[in-house]
Image 1 (tube, rainbow, N blue to C red):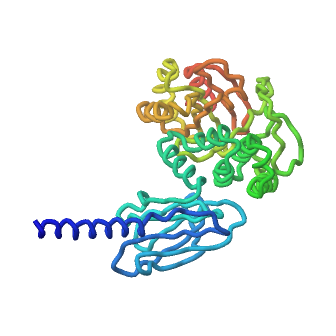
Image 2 (image 1 turned 60 degrees about the vertical axis):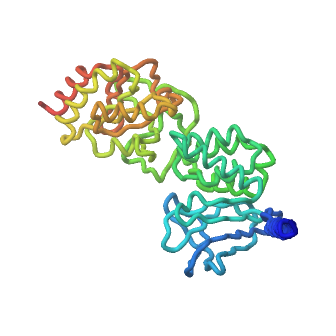
Length: 381
């Protein structure tokens, strides 16, 4: 009995010590500080180089600080004037850990097998950023998701961080950037990061040398892209006259996600067809085999086609599958919101617009067989 009581007493002391040890190893809680501090735990038996990086372009990163894992931990500290996204990378390992740099500690438990699954604890902004990343990874079109996120979160600092990462120099991108900026709250617009965004947009906006309506935006090869005109944002229809009214130029997102312009498509082409269609449009899909036949016959002679799809971003995979299934080899643009269609006065599908070498409209809303007759006349066979 005495031995049993002694055993229970020793066991109780052990359990008490164990509990005390757990309390002493209580998880550290990130705190607000002056500047950023990225504290990492990385369990390794060998020396490991660590890099703190900034994103320069979509695929290019710049290392701003280097460190090493010492006693299974590493640390990056510094001052930050405004919130921004940093990336932590490791020599010899794939993947990067995105972290928010603000006046707060960020604790990182690195998963060396899957860097992207590392556990991060930091400011409330860091938590919002991680939730945002989970959502955007599931988005069908990330650019549109970002625009919608900014619009629906006008008071969140994260919206300005996202917008800064979206900034681009093309007319179309700048237009989207400007619209997104205007949806931000006045407080965010006047913040340091908001002012940086506003300055970038104003600095890269084209200097207006002449002012024309969107329907008169010149496609003449003599007019350089470096001599831009002001686009008055009106949904003005390009009228069709005997002297061949110039078609409005447009930028749009291609099937690869990159922006392309009508001007770049018609360059050095004798004749170009703009085909307004959609994956859900039966008559559009029915004429695709004939358009494919015309493309194969005349493309090498100077005939080009650009498809402008009125599919929605929510159904972007249906559009991509239709392009693949119908074996359409020409360039494709998605026009969710009918922005381009409105420029050409499109009221129904299919709708075709045939252009000459200078972007003049030959005719519109004709069947593929009428188009074939014009191609025979132009090319002589």
